Figure 1 (cartoon, helix red, strand yellow):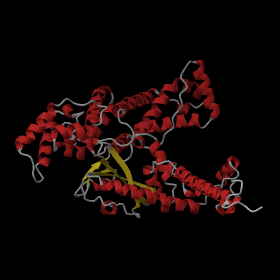
Figure 2 (cartoon, rainbow, N blue to C red):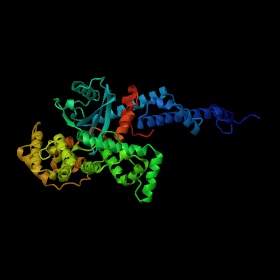
Figure 3 (cartoon, rainbow, N blue to C red):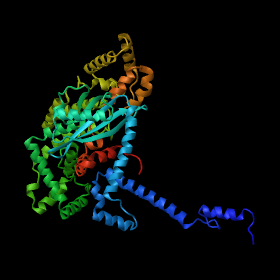
Figure 4 (cartoon, rainbow, N blue to C red):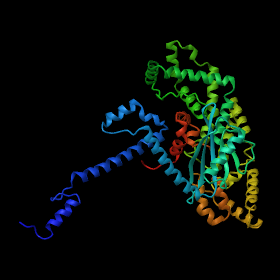
Length: 500
């Protein structure tokens, strides 16, 4: 039977497009689609694996570990883990993507602050990690990692300055940087540059604590406390006995904290937990014959004084949130800290020494270089004493009259008087956002200066790392990364927030 006109052509066209006469797809088309799906799955797997490596600061070699491969195989026998070279290519690709995005973001930033941290893989191998911070158009403080560079064994002030300049030039921000916050690096203290050098607040607090604990008697007490905690932590049977006694005495069974770093807050937390559980610990130590670990009355008094001296530090910094915070909050915080230590020192020689060291390292809080920045924060502008307020007003007038088309003295006095009279904002409010909108509308050019000054951050590292033992863990993890990949992994650890 001869097919009707068009029937043969239609069937032929369907077959040419990869269909059977009944409309089903040919196996070849299904294979192509399946291949695409598998390719997409491989790409997704690579990005997820890279995300895990970056977020946990693992070396690329970890994906070739036999135990890791066995674990993956047990979960999904068909899943193929990309090789180290494939993941390295993915790392380079994603790094280039994120670097390009960040360059675009920085191009629109007006005033930039840098933070720099000096650290080492080994004692003879120092690295410099540099991050940047600026206020966006919505009044939000933005922070990004820029680079981690080897100093090739040379941590002199000249080489650090050269590295900082190289980072600025590489990212095209040299003319936008006005302040650099440094963690440590006393060699930069008296170096003259076009930008302002300022010490990291958290790092300075840790320096104060280390200086305090260099006292031989205090150090001996702290080491004994470590030995006591270590005895309970290293013997599960001993710790079980401790928990039995605590349960019998209706005591809380909090976890003991073991710390051996140089950050003051983990030390305070260790001592607090030790003294809280010590009455039960004494019973275990007696039964085990560990009389050398028993604290005498003088040692207990010393520990109590250390806790009382460090508690004002904890109370003063408890309001600091995670990430980075504007430095304008530091002067009110320091005043609160020193007032509390002044009250405590009357019956506590440790608090008296701590107060003396705080004054030495932080300066005169009644006439402080942070006064102008604090004055420009609508939350704290009315908390300054007369000296700080006068210094702030003088400095602000000087800066506002330095450029072309500067306001007259009468105009400056008027705007500053109106700003002082304006009702302070709540401490939980965002001063940067306030200046972007309310401050700009009411106080004109003062807004631009305020946003520049308030964009200066208080610490060289995020606050969650600055005070807690998490900072020690982060430092240990990054030391395990191959130097070849170090910059890219740390860059993505800070900046790569997109989902894989």
